[in-house]
Amino acid sequence: MGSRAGLAAIEAIIDASGVAPAIEALLPAGVRHRQLSARTLLAGMMLTVEDRRPAYLTEVHAALTSLPAEDQKRLRVIEDWRAGLHLLTYRQTEYTFGLVTDALSKDQPDGGPSGDLAAVCDDLLEASIPGQYKDPASPQAPASLAADWTDVEAWSRPPRHGTTECADPEASWGHRNTNLPGPKGEMFFGYFLSAAVMTREEDGPPVPELARRITLAGCDHDPVRQLAAVLLRMAAAGIPLGDVTGDSGYAHRDAEAWAIPLRNAGAQLVQDLHPHDRGPKGTHEGAVVANGNLYCPQAPRTLLELAPLPPGASGEQVAAHDQQAAELARHKLGRHAADDADGYHRVTCPAVAGKVRCPLRPASMTLSRDRPEILTPPEHPPACCTQQTITVPPDVAAKTL
Image (tube, rainbow, N blue to C red; front, side, top):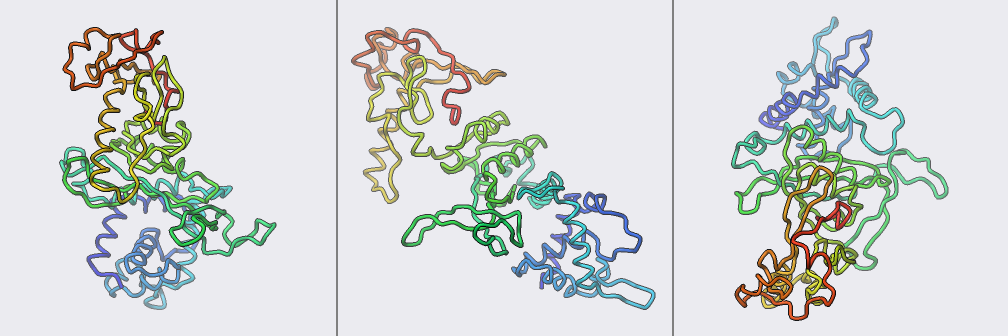
């Protein structure tokens, strides 16, 4: 059974979110009085989670009817009827839950949340974050988030082979990776649960790893696109986005699905590159496109093909890798201006930026010799070697630039 302090915290979150009256406004006005309110139903659902009970409606009813008598009366779990005191029944709980479910569902369910349901989830989670961790003026408030998704199996059995009918029609088949011996992946029937969790800023104080946003959708919905929509709603609500970290599953998606909209919303993406996106991938105005960035056309091939270290790398391997990464960074073209309204920006040659020595840029040859030197410049220098800056359109290395 949940503690009194736990119940008080739950009620404070529900009231701060404002979702209870919003849900009540969506419910049909019945002829008969309804004993269980949306606010009390939400409190019972949260009490069930707090007690680590199975998420069954019977457990919600049990959580409410096991509260102290004064709390039951205040929440109208016990109510004065003409015949005397009446204790909330399971059937009444089921009735209110059904009304709320219908009100927050789509007219044509498709495995994804409706706009109303998404708003309720967003508001409840935002209300659960202590004020000092979300007030932009507070030094404890991080704007950085860590994103990931996981698999959630449906409670129903999958449909029989060759059919689509089952007890949970919004679930679908998905693929998950496993760390067990044997095959590294398997199919499951259910949903993808995505979460954006608060994480400390670089060199910032520690912060609690609280979920700022969560979304759930059937496996026939791309979890990356689902979470992107949630984060864009955050930005639209005036909540600034900072660093958003994620694995290569996010980085490898079509740039229009993740990178471009989030960058346009103010996020800085910090993510692993997918193996398919690593190494040289063509050129732009003579500059080599590699690892999502633009490099001098004479950058050493071995550096352009530098791969991440394997798990368990030794200290010597880490030091050598850091040295190579630092040398590769010397050959990277630097930003000369921020993106314009259409997503174009300009970059400049690393020799012009004073990072390398190159005969094609005479002024750079006066730099100290601790910088890398281009010994064999291109015989026919491309634009990146002859112009002070080159323009980079939004479709070049769009996942990272």
